[in-house]
Length: 440
Image (cartoon, rainbow, N blue to C red; front, side, top):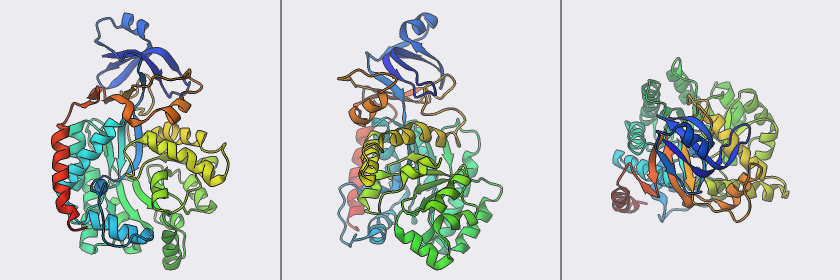
């Protein structure tokens, strides 16, 4: 299959850009990329899909989200949410405790559908649901497989619901990681999820490390999202959060430390030394009023900082817009934010995925996975290899994505999801959530 006659943003190391380009996809991999006429002549027997001057670019990557929060949209709650802890206890932890396995499956389907509609082709998720732990990651994986989504999944272990549930959470992570370390087409991966330092005792972390011995070394954990996380760690353990995690051997090149809002210079140095990835979630941090992480400083010191949404949205174009202005606003410097946002989304998110998947993702190049989107974007000013990111940041949104190709297959074409009955799934979600909301 050749997809062509469009402006191609490759995001490759050479910054290649094609005014009228095409991509030859063989099975699930990009076999060739170049001028449309040249590729049509070179591979004359291949089906040619004319995108009619749309923009062709790599699928977007969301490096951190929470599928379990899908039912929260439009929901009212009766208890206070006056600070970070009460937001967690009275909103998110109250919601996740009410989820059944069927809810988990519906949440995954609706989140993945919206992600595909917004051009997200790979999503790293951090799941929770203490009363439906066993089988929950496998239910999410089934939804991803049905829709054709590339994903990484984990369950967030914590002590907040008692020792029996904590043990189930540990087992679910281990069972899933072991299953998906086997050959599965490089579409679904597992990490070991941990909630945050302040909900994890030393006893639990020792159990986690014991369970992971010889299994894997990749973790996914919230780090100093609220200042309370630091206060708790200092009071109980005499160590800052990153120091404590380092002591337990949690950090490393396959670990994702999410947020990092309240880390200091010493912690930045530890994250750099251990080659740990960090993921920034600007809209969520602002919504929870927890503060603004030192993204510019982290990047300056060589940290691999990627970009996620924390489930605030399923549109990475939206997340980029806010990431840009949050940094310039926080630092009172209009020159900060633009390049940092490009680095997070288009350089570091692909680098983060390279720690788990076998081929390039987020880059259109020969040998990379064919995860590609097209957009109905007719630029009102010239677009080139030198300024395409300005167009992506200020001109594009997920709502103008026309086609989504994942692993060489159309999963959305002309805005129609091809792998599921969207109306039926959304209808089921609306009906089920009415029952859940009664108890919120």
